[in-house]
Image (cartoon, rainbow, N blue to C red; front, top):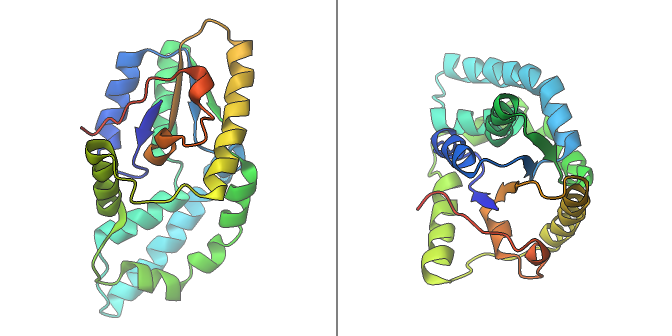
Length: 208
């Protein structure tokens, strides 16, 4: 299990190195088939909408933080972890499977038009103190270095982990004897309900 900080800019360098080193034959990903298909079909259109709004704001004298704009792009783009894993699979002949639940992706993405409108984009990209990946780094450091869980394991996470493990279990039967790698958010490594325990995973946090 490779536990990542989603949308962290270090992933471009680290993920490829770790996947190459681990040489998996099957990769499962914390990404829903619906979320992937939606972004593949609509991501470029929403990127253009973001660009149009940002240009309009800057033309009116409202500067936008580039990092905040990048975070908006990341919400509508195909996740980099998929792209990096897919590139590895194309080179190596390995298999790649998004195994997360469609339901929660649909619930979040159905509100994307409301999220990416002028008012909300202006709030997102205005000058303010950023948390984002920095906050995730702090939480991850507290957990992995000190054993402090300064975050909650939610009911949604439990539902999704149970669903993903059922999918992974079916794939392990289909590809018996193959080397598996699961890539997901680092918080799922905690696995307090023991969903992943039956796979006896080696858990890796690639940022240390």
